[in-house]
Length: 288
Image 1 (tube, rainbow, N blue to C red):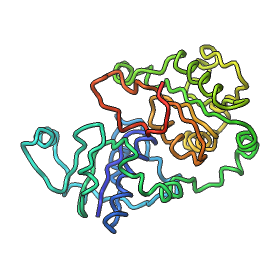
Image 2 (cartoon, one colour; image 1 turned 45 degrees about the vertical axis):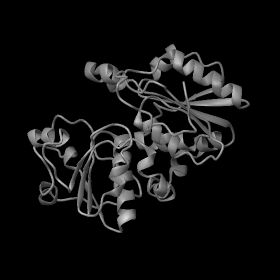
Image 3 (cartoon, rainbow, N blue to C red; image 1 turned 120 degrees about the vertical axis):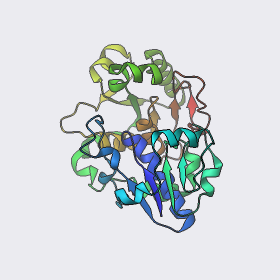
Image 4 (cartoon, rainbow, N blue to C red; image 1 turned 180 degrees about the horizontal axis):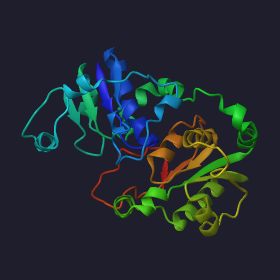
């Protein structure tokens, strides 16, 4: 049994699921999800469990099962410092890819963000299937999908929301500038003919006021009743992608199955330049 702890929003959950899914594929074992982060008693967390909308394994670890592995805060510090060892508990120690993690055998607990395709690239076909929606998205967004399919569609994701409103998040993550989006749209336009940009954002009014996109634009965020997981899937249906420094749009681009896709990502993913993001962005994506 492999237990992977889920934390954060949809993008983070997809990474955490993906590494666990690969490890059970390698070991021929079972995957269980620790979703205790989203317990209703955890009033400080505004996120929610989101993988139930997808064709993912819905097998949840009990409190008793997770307690067999978990450390308290002090022991976690000792573990990260190398003072205490636990052969069955794996806490992410660094942001870049750690090849030793893929040597994990059965009976293990994973806690981290694991933001590199190197942790799961070998099961891409499985993830493409399991990260598809249970509901038929064409029934709700048939006209939009027709427009996406019949044009040289490019998704643009602009994340502000919690990055801007929370000073701690803003200091750590930062936000992509209008200059980044201007350079990215110009780059795409130099590589493909007649691009049509489909914009996704948690602050669509800011986008309209601050991004000067001189090509046809469709603003999808803000459509009545559109859900975040539906936006991610619609991003993935576009032929090309311009992503933000966000795991959410990272997955929108990664799940894009266009063999000739162009993906543009920001060079600076975090404000903290000491964090090594070398393994975060796939080699064939363009960084600006």
